[in-house]
Length: 227
Image (cartoon, rainbow, N blue to C red; front, top):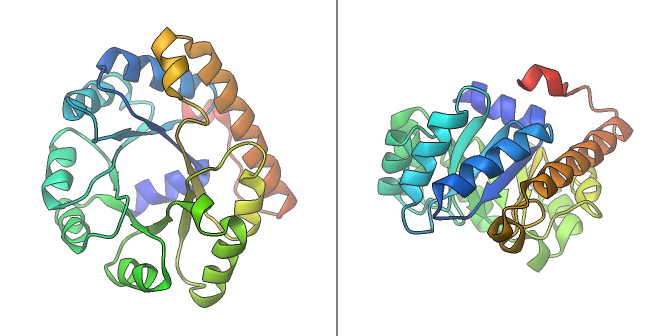
């Protein structure tokens, strides 16, 4: 559990895939890995999502950290674990999900937005708090304010984060960022232009690495080491 979270922090980016097509998910995962990001989150929201998750785990689990997103309860955690997920991400706080993740020995990034929710998520033993949706709550300034009140809490910023503003979130104290359409949007996935995903992943990885270097972050990420 701690090992998985440590690896996710080292990478610093969690790309999320939203699709009910396992072929699209596998190709997207392959493209993102080629861009230097060996982690992926498969949303459990679409139909057949567990089949998609299982397929990605089977195809890329040896070279990527594969997790499940949009997990809203204990049953979702159980299903994700059985499908092979190594971590789960919740959009909002669920104590049931946090407890079940502990039971299965899985890393969990619990969703929260308000100070009260952050306290609840942190108290649940979640590995990190996923601050979501960032764009609707003041962005980096809001994260910085929360970090001031909860300096021991690890925050993963998510929602409306891309090339232009990712650095600001790391400067505000995020340990990682979650991204969706900024890498794998519906239109690009629909036409199968997976090379675009590789370019976006590479550019975002480079932007994050640059931001961390400017902060004097001791974490260095070698693309070759991820393969």
